[in-house]
Image (cartoon, rainbow, N blue to C red; front, side, top):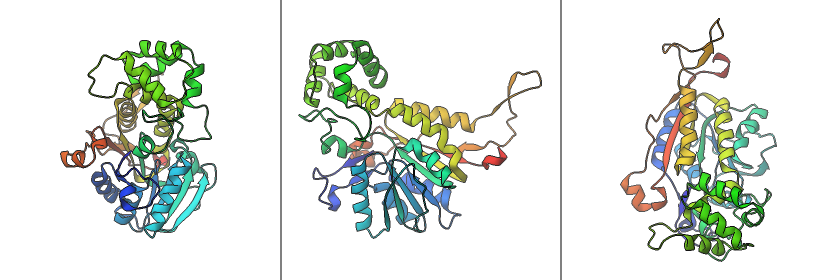
Length: 346
């Protein structure tokens, strides 16, 4: 999500916070989308440290902001930061609770995953003018969370929400070799998935992130540019947090709660994330299918108005200056979809 600039995460000083990725294009498009609204509703599915939130509310001071995050600790950090900046921040509610709109310029925190945004807003009879999903894991989790995202001597946990499911260690110590290989190959696109899975099973039980990193490192030949465990750690993190399923559910549901001219902006960091975003956006913005009187599927006429349009025919990428300031932004891609027609008119 964002690049951290200091390794002391809870001191509350400016240098401790993350640098939001692709901030300028986010602000530019949000202003355009919301320019006709006096108090637009902005929804952040991955609040993190609140960097995008703070910048968006400065750019759109009359906006109302709802920030979701599945990590309760990140909500606490963001809440402290936003209140220190003078914003009115409401205490976190659950994603199953009904939302009362915050005051203009205010923020409502929500403890929940971003695949709950549609349900949460629907039961509250709200439509969003702007929804932002900044995918992946923040550098705070890699550097300071102590959850096994780094290659150090931390407990091998990898959960973003401690209330969820089993830890990475529990799964690795109980899954069979075939399942471990499948996850590493599918979610890590790892060419040595079979060897790594076999070595994991031979060296069980695993307790620390360093143990896992050392196992993977021994599978690889020396002289690798990236740490050999990068893809394996990514795959296990995605599996433990059910990230791909959560993303697909969000992409299938969030467009329905967009107001007319409202937009969904998604920042992805690798092809596994970007592929479904691109596919769903193209499907929603492309010609719709219908059945003719003979029961055959046909494409509607190109002259008919589409319910959505893609504002970014090619993804927006960080420029060289941003990559220089923030190396974590190098692989980021921003895609934006806008609703053109009300649900009742599609």
